[in-house]
Amino acid sequence: MFGLSTLVSSLIGAGLLALASFGGGFYAGHHWESVALANQKVQDAQKVAADAAAALTRLELFVNSLQAASVQYRTQTDALDAKLTSIEKEFADARSQPLPIDCKPDALRVRALSAAIAAVNAAAYPATQP
Image (cartoon, rainbow, N blue to C red; front, top):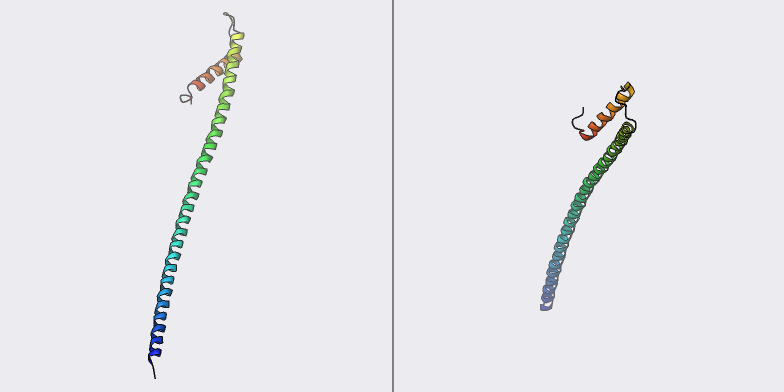
């Protein structure tokens, strides 16, 4: 009932089936590796993005602290400029209107000169002043 041609065609069919199974397995395995590799690349890219975001956050905090320090520095230098202007005015007044030798200064002038001297000392030695 089964002839040689049937046997050959069965063997060819079995060979083609084996070849198709091998090819399908190879394709599936290769595709699986490609998917795993793509997933790994996605995870790596997400980690790099997270690291970059953290670095940008640190940079933003640093820039904000620099801005705050700049504002504080500017405020302090403006205050010092105002003090120095006041000191220069007081000393110019003291030089332009000196007291006569036999004159005793009134309380207002003594307070003004004392304040000018205290301001000079505070500007020259800021750490030693209370």
